[in-house]
Amino acid sequence: MTKADKQTKLDDAEKRARRAVIDTALAMSRSGLSPGRSGNVSCRWKGGMLITPTGMQYETLKPRDIVFVTGKGTLQGRSLRKPSSEWRFHLAAYRARADMNAVVHTHSLYATVLACAHKPIPAFHYMVAVAGGSDIPMVPYDTFGTEELAQHVAEGLAHRNACLMANHGQIAIGKDLAQALELAHEVEVLAQQYVNVLSIGEAHILPEEEMARVLERFKSYGQRAQDT
Image 1 (spheres, rainbow, N blue to C red):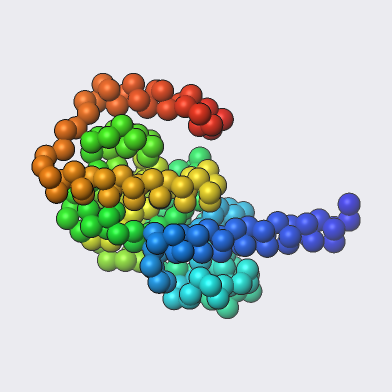
Image 2: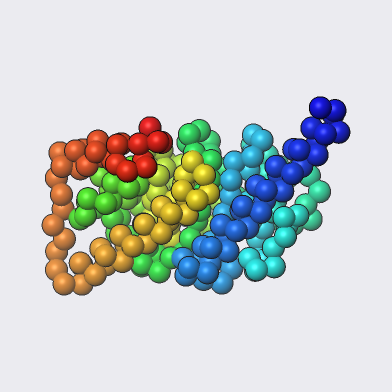
């Protein structure tokens, strides 16, 4: 294979990665997880990441609009677009979790309601374990786009695959874009269930020892066994 052939192959791979980011953003928006232009999506790429641009409607995005941000937080390539204003916490998530390759951030309704009420999601249902622990934590508020918020997100995702962001929304990570998006959906379903439980009374929380058993069983549950 010639050097030119290798370059063409790399270019094709990057086009596919950029298209996958767009497809995920469209799926996120069309499912109602993030209305309008809210939310953002990224995937790990060549020591940095490919991320949706700021302030653009997902339906209008082309592969060239997706922005490459290096691992040092600088822009590279020929993109004329600015990255999402939240690029810092995407990058922080990748630094905190070398095992994860995709980030989906949404302003989904019920997760955002809980985030604005400063209520993390406890083990009211065993499926809370889908985020990798016995709860879905909430990280403190800070101004969007800041390094301070990025540090909060990194700490929240250090031992979980999803967390709520106070007065903001939710963030989910995965080994790929499909997994991150699926988790974001599951977090929203759990958030809706928890809000409904709170509307009729106090939630009964499963004990830590039961959640430990659930987490152990999740390692071999269905297709999840392939990820271990």
